Image 1 (cartoon, rainbow, N blue to C red):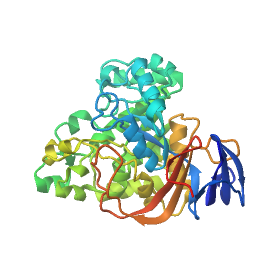
Image 2: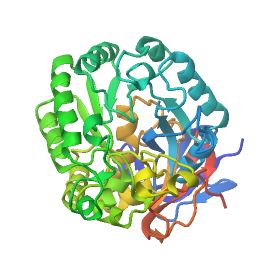
Image 3: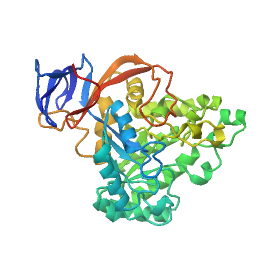
Image 4: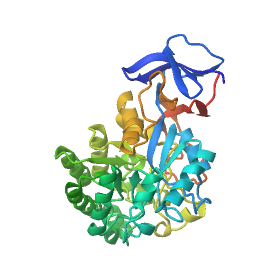
Length: 419
C-alpha cells in the first residue's frame, strides 16, 4: 500500500497544535515533519488536522427501521461529517438489551461501516424501565455505555440496581433526562410560543427533576453518569454543581440546542421537533456558556433519521428528532470559536474517553492509529443535501462556518480526495 501524506495543516499533536505534515503508512501515522512527499497527498491548506471525531449519540436505526437509516448510510453521513467512530443507541427494533443484538450491531458495523460502530446497551429489558437488562452478557460483548435512550428510567429502585451493577463493572450510565409523565402530552417547550400556538408544552422541570434524582443515586452508587442532550439552564447548573462536588458526572449538548431556540418552532416546521424540545433563548445561551467553560463535556449529535412521510405531517403528529452528523463540526466551530484544542476535545477526545472508545480521540503521534480529520474552520458553506437516507434537518439553506475537507479511518480515506 502506498503512503498517504497530509500536508500544510495545523496538526494537533501531543505537544499541541503544530504546523507540519503527516505520513500515513497502512493504518498508522508513520512520520511527522516538514516537506514530506508521497504520490497520494491531501493538501490541508492551513486547515486543522486532528483525531477523527467521535459521536456518543447516533441513531442508526439498524436493526428494524432501515428504511429510515442503516449502518451503511448512517456511517456514510458520519464520514462526511468528520467522524471515525459512532456510538449507536440501543432503541432499535428489537432493542439492544442482550449480547446477541449488540454483537449484530458490532459485526454489521465492521462489514459495511464507513466509521467504527460501537453498540450501547439498554439499562432495562425492552427499554421499558421495569427489569434490569442482561448487562453482564452485553459487557462481555464489548458494551460499555448503558442507556434506555428515548425514555428515562422512571423507577429509582430499578435505576439504582443498574447503577450499582454497572459501577462494579466500570461502565457508564447515560440518561435520557426527560420525565415521561411530564413530557407525554407535550409537543414543544412550555413557554410563550406554545401558549401562542395553543399547544401542550414540556416544561424544563421535566429535565431538571430527573437530573436531580439521578445525581442523588450517583452519590449513593458511585457510578459514572452521563446526561444526554442537556437542554435547560437549570440543568447546566445542576451539572456544574455536581462536578464541583466531585461526582463522576459528564454531559452532552446537541448542535441544534446550541443554535436554535423555541422561537424557531413557531413555524411548526417538524424539522424543529425534537426531544428534549428547543427551549428559550436564555436556556440556549446557558448551554453555549456551559460548553465554552467545560461544564458540558461534549457535543453529541442525537442523529435521529425519519422518513419524509413521517415528518411531512402536522407538527403535533410528527416524530421527534433531527439528523446532524454532517453538520455538527460546523455548528460546534461557530460556538467555540478559534480554539482547535477545545474543538477536538468536545468532538473527539472527550467523547472517546467518556464512552471508553480506546482507539480514537488521541492527539496525533508517530505510531498512533490513523483515525484523522481535516477541518477548515473558516470555510463558509450552505448545506443543500445529505448522504443520510433521511432529510429531517433544520440546517438546509442556512450558512455554516467551518467544513470537513477529509476524513481518514484506519489509514483509509472515507471522505474527501487526494491530489
